[in-house]
Image 1 (cartoon, rainbow, N blue to C red):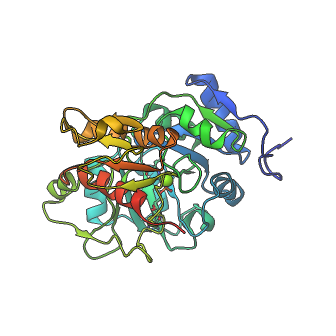
Image 2: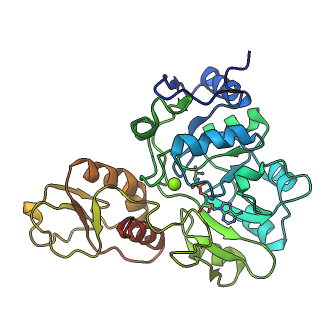
Length: 335
Ligand code: TXA
Ligand code: MG
């Protein structure tokens, strides 16, 4: 009867391609109800969704991603009402939800007594990370499902986040039950994460909503709590979390022969003619466009086979903070 309840997804068996209409979404919900895992579009990146209240479903997410288990996952809900069932919102959390939901902001709050999100999804923490995504397909999926969906980015652990169903399939075909074919994700960066755990709010991860916009909404500066490389505050922010296979060299004003070149703006670094592959995040130096291109360009340059991706300097303002954060992680040494 319930084909997903007792067995994990058999590696190598087919991943269902689900169309973005009503029938595809209903099929996705049936798989999710049965404890399966389905990749779906959000406005940031594709998420690998599983019923957050079902620890077996959550375990399948970790298994499919080969993700270290100590990472708590973001629980996605349809609206603020559903979020309030799961977590305790102080005044700041309410202000942020009013200003940015639905949208690319995740709010970490204390878990409430009525919280149904499994311990595994919370990695044993007494707090919970909640997000109301803005993508219409994500919204429709969640509203009809009626439970929170745990959904990290739909890539294998340590690889770049997918912004298109073909990226999802490149990493996870045969390892997940389904993927909703909903086109390209718009923002291209994961959500910004803010903790509201009493005291002043803290920025745990820069992302799709710029710090300046959050500070405007709150009428004050926010403190960082990014942690250290060895003990990151948001446990998913391990230094190599966003690493492509190639080495990444930052602030490159010169390209060495055989390197792939990731440009920003119109400045051509010396030696770019010798590059193995060249892509530009944004010729017109637009940070929003650059964010949308970041993961797919890294992926494409990685696929060129170059041993190193040399990245041109990128300004730190607005979404540039999150882009540079991702690139620094991609450049970090891995072991
Ligand atoms: O844009 C996004 O946020 C995407 C899309 C799919 O929605 N999702 C995403 O989820 O990036 P995930 O699970 O890859 O990111 C979870 C991040 C990790 O850095 C994790 O450590 C942090 O959220 N996190 C989750 N729960 C937390 C908690 N209770 N306290 C602190 N950090 C938490
Ligand atoms: Mg990820």
